[in-house]
Amino acid sequence: MLYDCRSLADRDRGIAAAIEAVKNGELVVLPTDTVYGIGADAFTPFAVKALLDAKGQGRAAPPVLIGSRHTLDGLVFTLPRAARDLVEAFWPGALTIVVEHSPSLQWDLGETNGAVAVRMPLHPVALEVLRETGPMAVSSANKTGQPAALTAEQARDQLGYAVRSYLEAGPCPDPVPSTIVDLTGEVPQLLREGAISLTELRDVVPDIESRVA
Image 1: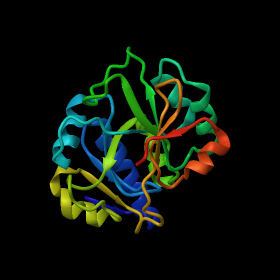
Image 2: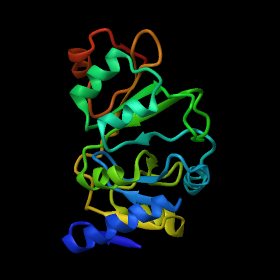
Image 3: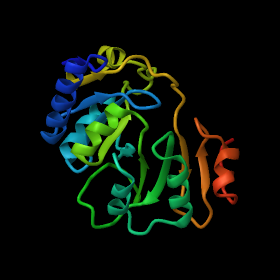
Image 4: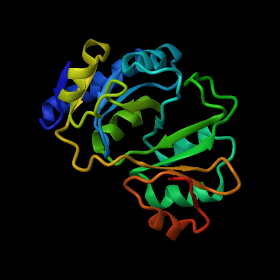
């Protein structure tokens, strides 16, 4: 079902429905500060599999979205100083960090190789959902190979009944993908330059190297 979160009453119903769906292991589509995402409980393996199946992709691990900076400490074994500095500067926002996840976590996100991409989005609807559900595996709300959805309605056209709840908040104001920084090695590596530039990153962590062609 699609809920128009631009209406206060529909927003409350939609957020409640999305939270319930995620806790039941079902899929939801929600707005972020980049593009719309399709999400599932990160700790429910069958829900993550349903997400990957809905997109039509293999076992490539989706990013994890969180609703609080403090949640990050529970997901990682150790957090490098560079990661803390970047999070302090750019979260919530369009920065995804790749860090080594704690080996004790009971999740199956796909082929992670011991690392996870984590982001805290700057969108009130997404944050309200995430603060109740906990970490969610979230990928762009589109079929693999198709354009990213800029509204929940566009996502529904592609994903249909695979998703339980769609939260519509209008067109994405700035549909530029997040910037991705790998912090699993000795030197931070820029993997994708998106909404946050390399220059902005180096203002915070000067030794970041770029692997962007």
